[in-house]
Image (cartoon, rainbow, N blue to C red; front, side):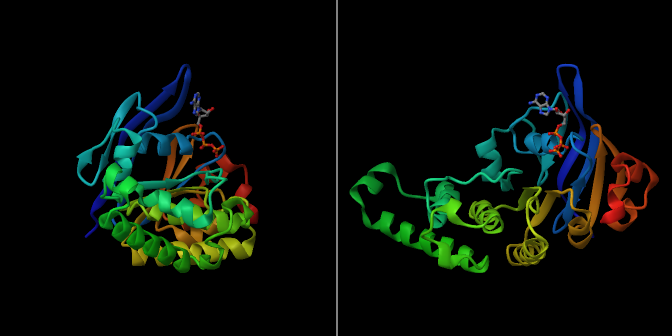
Length: 258
Ligand SMILES: Nc1ncnc2c1ncn2[C@@H]1O[C@H](COP(=O)(O)OP(=O)(O)OP(=O)(O)O)[C@@H](O)[C@H]1O
C-alpha cells in the first residue's frame, strides 16, 4: 500500500501581486520518483523553496513524514531528512571534490570544537569514518579518481554528480533535484538516470524532481504533476501527461520533439 512521505497541502504563494503557486496539493509516496514539470515560470522552484523552508507560503502547509514542517528553518529541514540540489550547480569553487562532499557530513559530526582543535582521538575516528564514507559515495558515482581535483575542474555532468553526492551525505529520506539533467548531453543524461535509480534503491530514497527534458521524465518518474502559472493542470503517469490536451497547450507543442 502506498504511504505518503511528503504532502503539499493547499499551498498558495504570492509575491506582491504575482500568484506564483495557486492552491496546489500533491502527495509524494515513499519510494516514488515524482516529477514536477511545467513551462518556465510555472512555479516549480518556488515549491522547492517552500518545502525546504526558504519561503514561507502565503497559505497552506507542508507535511513531511507525518509532521507539519511549514516554515521550519532550512538547516532544520535538512536534519529532518530533506536534501536538495540546485538548478544552477552550487559547489564550493575553491574546494576539492572530496571537500565538497565532506561539507554534507557536517551535521553528523559528533565531536566538539575543543576536540577538533586539540585533535583528540574522537575527532580522528570521526574524520576517518566520514572521509571513508565520502570516498564511498564518490566511488558509487564513478568520480573517486577526481577526489582531489578542484570541483570546478570537472565536467558539468560530473559536477552535478558531486552535488548529488553532497546531498546524499546528509542522509536524506527525500531528495529534491532541481533540473538535474539541465545542460547535460544525452550520454550524461542517460548516465544520470541510471545513477538516480541506483541510489534510490541503495539508500531507500524518495525523489522529487523538477525537469524540462520529457524523455528524462518519462524514463525516470512514476508520477508527475504538471504546473502552469502556479496551478496544477495534470497529475498522473508521465506517458499520459504528454498527450493531455491542457499539458500540450501549456507547452505549445514542446513535446513533439521529446
Ligand atoms: N523571490 C521572488 N520574488 C518575486 N517573484 C518571484 C520570486 N520567486 C519566484 N517569483 C515569481 O514566481 C513565478 C514562478 O517562478 P519559479 O521560479 O518558481 O518558476 P519555475 O517553474 O521554477 O521556472 P523555471 O523553469 O524558469 O525555473 C515567476 O513569475 C517568478 O517571477
